[in-house]
Amino acid sequence: MKIKFLFIAAFTLVTTISSAQDPIFTQFYLVPETLNPAFTGISNTWNAGLMHRRQWPDGNRKMDTQFGFANNLISDEIGVGVTVLNHSEVFTGYNYFKFNGAFAYRVDLDYDWRLRLGLEAGLGRKDFNFNNLLLEDQINSNTGAISPGSVDPGVLDYSNKINFLDFAAGFVLDQENAWFGVAVKHLNRPDISFRENANVPLDLFLTVHGGYFFEFLNSPTSLIPEGTNLMLTANYMRQGQYNRLDIGAVMDYSRFSFGLVAATNPERRAPNSHFLTSINPVLTFKSSEFTFGYSYDWNTSKIGRTQGVHELSLTWQSSYRCDRCDNYKVKLKRNGEAGYQKM
Image 1 (cartoon, one colour):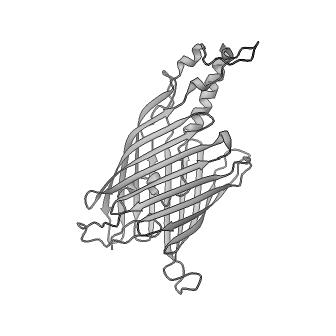
Image 2 (cartoon, one colour):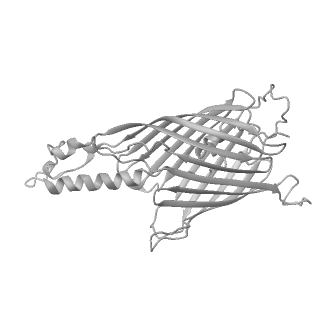
Image 3 (cartoon, helix red, strand yellow):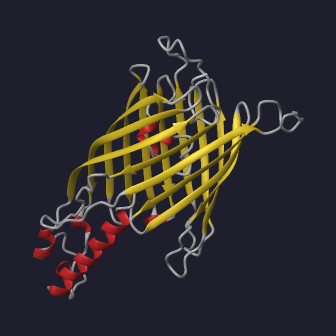
């Protein structure tokens, strides 16, 4: 009995540690709402989007993550919105769901620069079906038959579902061609333990992100037409002992863009860890209101054959413009992030 209980406890501990890491997205610059609530309402019009990420699609290792958002301005300085996140793992049966409301307030620092302060709060839920565990007392050693249930009292110490409140905050400094932001999630350190009397605080998630874009060439050519921009962007993330730095460059044309994002492990805490963990090409197509993006994470480490990571994004910005913002010129940034800026 003791051995079985230790097995369950160890298995749960491993699952809790691995599942405590927040899902992250390669196309963070297209949907910055995944990183920082201060981006809420930055487009100065109705803005919404969906993302789907499938990691390691090979059989039982498959993990799916979906993210959705919608936001708009309710006054010249205040933006409000909602975000939804759902993450599921096939092998463990684990599921993580979160629904948040977001709020952002803009302060004009001078003619060019703005400070945006953001808050996010909502409900989270983690599910894990412990009934799927196969224990010793379910196996008939004579016939090999599997009993559908277990009478092991150790299983009763665990709940299949936990609910918690979650809070995040961040800020963004931005101007017409550049932005810099910092956000911290899980400020209240919610308890994510599946055991009734245990306490496993969710690690803080820190993200530091920024970008800069400029006209690639002053003199257009046949391959690089007028108005082509080059965007440079970076995103550093830390949660517990895990850290990651994404660095990317994107060439942006009028109707499509392509780029490359490198995922790195800058601290390399494990002796056999890799600095460069994946190379991720990104391609987007744009219409007047919609932007469709696709990225593929090509693994460069020795983790094995994973079939990579596929990520799809679809974002929408309404053609309606803010009539009450008479001191603003609506200017859509082609990189999908900087939004509509003061001129």
